[in-house]
Length: 448
Image 1: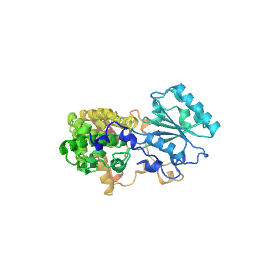
Image 2: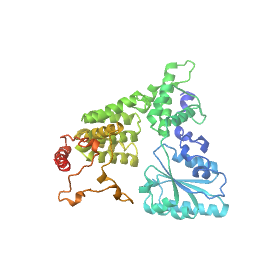
Image 3: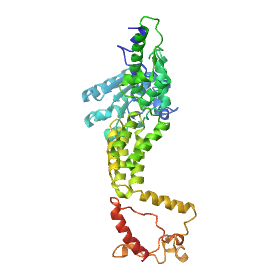
Image 4: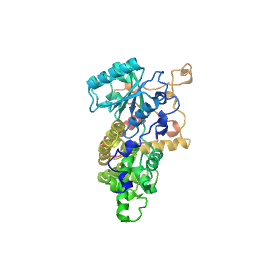
């Protein structure tokens, strides 16, 4: 094994080695690291000032553990880490007692980092309260689930809730470049082709840990390939290619640029497949977007639009299902978020379709933009302010609830648009019933 190959084997994972030692090295989360922010204040070496406990909520690989450790190193506070997977109430109480002793005997403040706090039971979270409330510890808790549902209210009220965002492509690129050259990382033992760098960023989907893990595995593959090619000759620096990335992560590298043509082509095919009721094609394009690291919130937004534009009142439940899928993705994140996205996609693709509501609002907007709006009929104008009745506002208005059938003959559109029809329901799905009812309603309202 060459010395370069040894960089990738039998040691601490690259993602751990590359964790920042200070907040200055943290990539991303700029909205939480502005001067004077709670995290920056917490990282200050001045431990005489009070510090607030915080709950860090965000997807995996966004830097929750990194921030906690960087704060501990920068501030000089004592750092204790517990995992909600293995720690129990007894462990929490022992940490609290030791923190109290350290504060009283040595004047030393303790940071308690609790990973995956959403896995703690109510009793375990209750055990944290005395230490947090009395300042024995500064709690930094991390969770990938919405704390409003997974953290008890007393603990939430005593902590600041800070939301971490997925890293953008620029942040991920910075991390990858640093890992290739930094002595803590690969120390220049490999070089990275631009296509390979782009593939790493794409596959990471905002997750720094995923990007660095894939880089380390691909570097090992590239190093092995270089050794076989050299066969005793002077070794050249291995070059990591996109092919090496694909081999390392055991998945095909999709040609998909989130800011390029493929992004628009695939989402276009996705929506058109739903509109065309081809559920299999729709699921296929959904899978391509998920595997390429497309933002699931973008997919969810497109589903909501599709439900309103292409289905409408042919199936009013479609919009509810699309909105529920969007909420579910925001609540549980990925990769589990793929399930409600698939459910909504399948429902929208297989249900009845109508763009009547979409056409109606477009036609009405076109009239308004062309100046076809006219004055509101006098009997519909607001009559509640002083002097309105002297102007004839509200005079002659018929209250529909006074009618036995709840509908009265009355003009609602301005004179210039009287008789104009915007909404023309189809005979598809639920809209078939709407069409029959609407015909009767219009006859009564128009007095025909």
